Length: 116
Length: 116
Image (cartoon, rainbow over all chains, first blue to last red; front, side, top):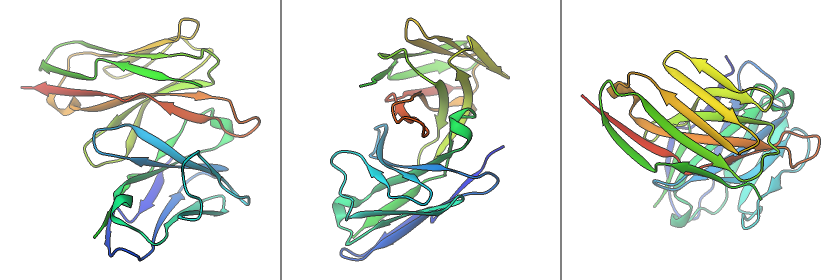
């Protein structure tokens, strides 16, 4: 089945530094990738939608200058949290889908970001 | 805007029971519906995908039904086991982005505990 690889699985960084999270579709071409954020005991909150070769579409309230998304190829999307602060600590998950969503979405294993 | 509701929020049962998890959505114009499982600190694992033209899907001890007109889906788990303990999320795809992949709308999940 479709596999999405997300790295790193966890990261601890100092306040003010930037962190990059990678999301790769291993065995299919992901025209569209989605980035979510999840707070403890809550459901997923969509942050942005990235389409290969074009600018990401951010959800209302999500700072696009803080959460930089790049989708340079059909198999790789990256989320960079710039100038991270403790309030950015969260669980970040990517998902990918191809062929118009007929086969649903596959999710990465998530990245636990802790900013100290 | 699509809203997805899951009932109950939490469920604790002894091993061996048959379970029903409920999901409802406000806009019946969906592309498909997907049930996911999430273990603590992990990403999402797809369990079943039901296209809007389908009524149900089965995989092992899991059966999911879809009544698109009434905006409801149920996930039936037969002969529950302790290993089924996890959070179960329901998500629908609303094709609200034109020709690109539709976004997923998630419920808040049902936290299931199956005790031996």
